[in-house]
Image (cartoon, rainbow, N blue to C red):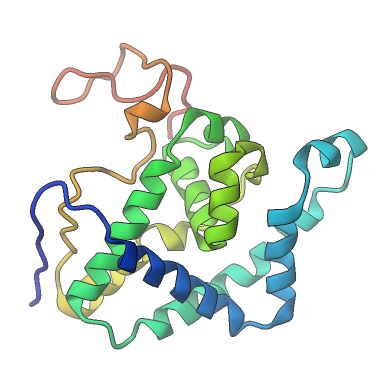
Length: 206
């Protein structure tokens, strides 16, 4: 059994972030030109213009047909990584999901606890360009889109191969509504173990 641990508050390194995005791009690249074009269209679209024109939403979801193949290829590309390397990648994904755990993004994607997590997984899975586009302008997010498999992909790989869940040492949670800085108002019901509100006011429950 391999267990990887880090000091509390461990942050992803720039090299680890670059490695994640490079692996994501490599996995997509091997699927050919069509998913590349679909992803690029999502990055370049003008959501305000599309709404004004009443465009068909179908193109927004065309990439869904490629997500399973993408995840499969990403697993293959990480087949030889060590437990420490998988933990490093999981730490990056965890941080990326945490950073977009925000009220303004949730207003576009919608979703309860799990649904909003999977929506954020979709944003990460589409790559750095789309991720940064949504971070800058939440209207670029796709309502109700999801990629559950991206959220804990490296954690599951670590557990499957080494018999232990990775310990990222980050002190944060990728689960929905965990990033309090991303939410303006918290409800007073359902306090957590420390007596603090467990979710933002108005956020849907599972």
